Every structure is written in structure tokens, then in C-alpha cells.
Image (cartoon, rainbow, N blue to C red; front, top):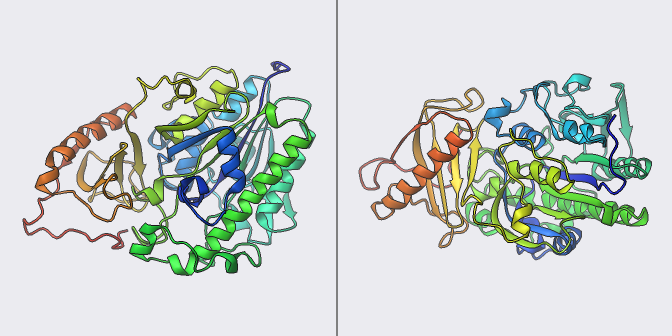
Amino acid sequence: MPQTDANQPNVIVFFTDQQRWDTSGLHGNPLDLTPNFDRMAQRGTHVHRSFTCQPVCGPARSCLQTGLYATTTGCFRNGIPLSPNLKTLAHHFGDAGYATGYIGKWHLHSGSTGPVPTENRGGYDYWLASNVLEMTSDAYQTRLFDNDNQPVDLPGYRVDAVTDAVIRYVDQHKNAPFYLFTSYIEPHHQNHLDDYPPPDGYRERYTGKWIPPDLAALGGSTHQHLGGYYGMVKRLDEALGRLLDALKSLDLLDKTIILFTSDHGCHFKTRNSEYKRSCHESSIRVPTAFHGPGFVGGGQIQELVSLVDLPPTLLDAAGLGVPDEMQGRSILPLLCGETDDWPEEVFVQISEAQVGRAVRTQRWKYGVDAPNKGGGKDAGSDTYIEQYLYDLDADPYELRNLIGLRSHENVAAVMRERLIRRMVEAGEETPTIEPAPQQGSGQRRVPEGEARN
């Protein structure tokens, strides 16, 4: 087995599920939900504009494990196993001599309740996980499976149960470089209840408090669910604080790279009939920060960063080579002010609720839909129709769709070319994108917030 350098940094990924970017105080949330994240981001490097490249659980996870887009991994919808032929972060770190561990939710196997076979675990050595954690656990009943496929029931609120396991792993591996991926289910909804169950007493703290403007305008399930959702976010941040304290007590805090991010956001049934799977900020924008060697004092990055950029960043920061096949790129040059070659937009592939694609620049958001394709059945299409255009400077909450307006034809044309270019760069065939019918032509526009499956 390769030997790592004694000074090689440890790497921990603290990965949440369905967490909006604006749960963070650094993004204007006034409820003090994330003091530990905010402090870590301010001491380290805050990725101010961070976006998923696939706003649904399994596909996003395939991207974060591999640095590839979901159409390249083949996991374009939930329930498609990650191919054993793909190299994951576990393989790359393991090949460099790291101990590798995975704790929490996997969601890259086909089963929903049983253990994940060894060959479908993405190359991780230590394993304490469930494929679809929301199906094998509840808020106060956490069941994971170990390396031998045996069920392990952990006590406490689910966030705390997983965090206890994480701290045990760190303590047991403190003398050798390790790479640990920690995947929480919170603040994702509990499927069988269609609820967001926080720890006892936390829902009451936040119900009726501050509501993000997009949710206040569009409603959805916001009033029913937001208090519980915020309570879950608060407990996650407390777990992050516990982990940081443990690292400090073990003299590992400044020897460990920590990445905090999420797979996608949550729009509370305001953009389609469920919680994500759309091109809107509420679905695609997530909180992201790095801490540790190479990131302390990195400041706030203003460039647009995609989920596929995070795997090459971790490898680069650990002093390992970035594989040529990865479709993302390391953000480390941005910390040095090298921004000239950085893309001006992020690219998003959307599946299950629809077959869609989108690009977002600093100012504009442009999305298309394949109306003749089935979400969850088709990975892509050769033909799309324009669906959304938002001016994020004038309309940051995406309440006015400008697509089809004569006044914005030129903007749509430029964004159309950007999207086609990014689709081709991601390995897709060059599509045909049909312009949206002009407003006033007799075509009915789909109102904002109308459910679309």
C-alpha cells in the first residue's frame, strides 16, 4: 500500500441533504442557525456562489464522488447504482495511502432498505452507511450497516448519532492521514411522514420566524414545514461545532481539510409538486465552505462554483494530482486571484421532475425543457424549448420569468449559445433549442409556482 507523507492533511467532507444556501447567516439569514458554519467559512474560504450541477440526491452524489456530470456517471436519476468502473474520491485518496471511510447516506445503489454490497460502495474501506437513510431510519431511530452488512442501531437524534460515529472514526484514525465522507440526511424531509422532523423543542423555536422572500411570495408548503427544517439545520450546525471541537482537542483542526456543502436546496413545493428538481436558486444554490491547510484566510470567493469543482479541489489541496477525466476544476487558483480562465457560468442538468438544462451567470439564469421526454426515464434530449429567463440583478427571487419577451430576445440568444456550449463540453450531443413563443402571441405562459411533473 502506498505510504503517505507524515504532513499529508486529513480530509473530511461534511455533506448535508437539501440545505438552502440562505439558511446561513453569511447569506442573510437572521435566525443564527449556522454560527459554526459562518465562523468556519470566515476563518477559511467561503464559496459565496456555490451550485449543484444536479438538484436531486443520487445524481448529485455521483457528481461529488467522481467530479463528473450525471450524464457521464450514468446516474441521471435516483436508483441507478454508481458503476464500479468509475473512480471515486475514495479510490484516489486510497491509492495515495489514505485510510478512507464513509458514514451516513449513500444513495448510489439500487436498493432502498438493505445493506449496500461491497462492490457498490465506491471503494471506501470503512463503511457505516445506509443507501437511502430516510428509508432505514427516522428522527430518533438511526439504522446503518457496517462493513459486514450487519445492521447497526445508533442512539440519539439522527444528526447526533451520525456525528458520534464520525468523532469515533476521527479518534481511531488520528495517527494516520484519513479521508472521511460524512453524509447526513438532514435537513431532507422524512418521506413516509412528508415532514421535516427536528429535535424535540426545535420546531417551536423557528416556526413563524423569518421566511425567505421567494417562499413568502409563492407559499407552497412553507408555513407547514419551515420551522422543522430550520430546526434540523440548527442541529446540523451544532454537530459541525462538535466535530470542530473534537478536531481541536485531538490537535487535528489545522491538519485537516474540511469541506461543508450540500447536494441541492429546497423550494418547498413552490416550483413544482415537490421540493427540488428545478433550475431555481432554491433548488440549486447551496452553502459551501472550506477550512484547513490551503484554505485558512482564503476569504470569500465570488466566482460561480459547481459541485463538480469540489472533488478536484480536494485532491489538489491534498497535494494529489487532479485526474484528466474529471469535468470540474480545482478552485485553488481562485484563492490566488487567478480568475481569467474561470467559466462565467455554471451548468445544471435537471431530471425526474423534467428533462431540463440550465446555465447561470452572475446576472442571468436561463433554463430549457424537453417536453417530449419523461423525467426519470430519459437522461437527455436532442430538442428543448426555452422555459425560463431571469434577471437576477433585478429579480433575485426569480418571481418574473422574462422568456419570450421581445425586450430580452438578445439576452436569450446569448444564453442559448452558452447553454449549448456547456452541454457539448459536458459530453452531450449538440441539441436544438427552440425559442419560446413571444408573449402576446396567444400562447399560454405557465405561471410561477404552478406544479409541473
